[in-house]
Length: 113
View: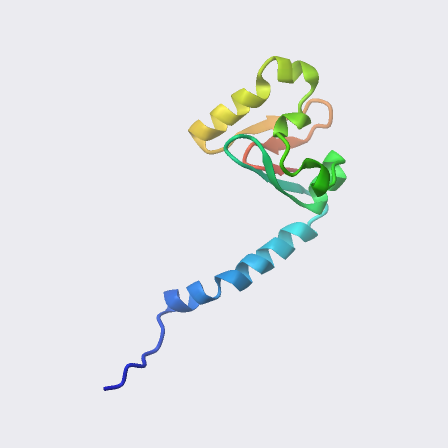
């Protein structure tokens, strides 16, 4: 009895996931006009691209593992703005905040453009 069979499109796609993840990582890391970073549910930065470094001024080795509240002014940190942002993002799935100083829009999901 022949045990061989053609793989389904889903099985073929599943085998290709590592290559797709690598391609996506290279794409994100190559973007310089838009800062893209991810934070975990505790607010720690877990990924950082070249655009984020250019815009925010932190190298990945400086910011990954640190809390995203570093991006807030001391006054906003004292007012609890980072915690409010994380709570809102957890409830709604996203949060966008306009930075009055730079005019940039920042999302708690991790993208700043």
